[in-house]
Length: 255
Image (cartoon, rainbow, N blue to C red; front, side, top):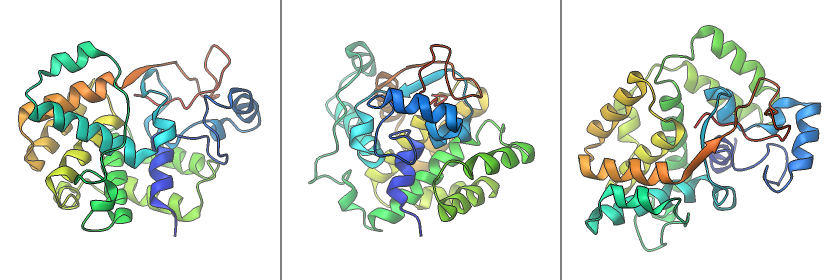
């Protein structure tokens, strides 16, 4: 069985697969890995979402890990919402300091009633569902992804899980049911919004539908949008080689 938390970290581009180092910490090593095996220098999200330019989470995320990033951003958005702040204030403040959610709140992974691993898998499924929202992952694309995953070093069990999720039709009922608390509902939406920038009608429509099914107030969704947007920075264009024009390897997330 694979480790759900590691898979979530890989999807968020926290580390170079196969090493214990971040892309930023080991730029030279990443460059060599890109030459030897382009996929090893990229995060799994680059495989699922493509390698176009977009936005990616700032450097603090690589130290926290996926669960802490998602929970921390959801908690910050909730606090801003409860304190009556305007989303525009969050956007104007710039990139926030990414912190894990407090241990005594329902946003902390240890508070998950269904267990941390089970909820982590729900977040992974949410990210994959968001990745499929614009319909670009067709049969041909899934075959390409399958070939790339075999080179990504994630293990056969994790590979089978991802391919199964990619081939499974969208089931919002099951996905939404995987969030058992109000905090988890907000985290599920946050994970989905982290995965994509809604720059198509299909992606925007999916996020709106998801927010509605989760029962999230519009004002709270606006705070998630502002918090996640502030936490992202422009990502460089990454060609198929996995090495951007500057010559420095990156995770290449299409965020």
